[in-house]
Amino acid sequence: MDKQKVLLVEDEPSLTAMYQAVFRETPYELLATKDAKSGSELAEKELPKLILLDIIIPREDGKVVEFNKRVGFELLAKLKKNPKTKNIPVIVLTNLDSPEDRAKAKKLGSEEYLIKANFLPKEVVDQVSKILKKK
Image (cartoon, rainbow, N blue to C red; front, side, top):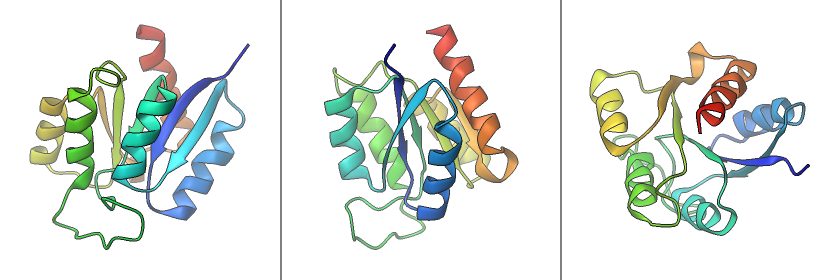
């Protein structure tokens, strides 16, 4: 059976490598990209079963990340407006822990809001499984 695809949009290479290692032991195939532009393109091309989305990411590869620019929210809004990707569940995976960010993520359509520092990668996989079982 083909593994279900999960897309990770994360610009920190060490975190991406850590999640790739953990996902190898799961029934999921982890696709990874590091900016909003390629995240949007990959989501539309691959139609993953779920997207793990960081909030502080560059718009395009090589562009500087401005901390106050929460580009992940722009990507989330774009994904939810696109007929091809609007039904793909999104888990926001970030270290931004403000009530405003949580509320914005929910309003834009995220299924879950996880603080990276509070979840082991294995627990993130558990959250992915939990959401996909509901779908």
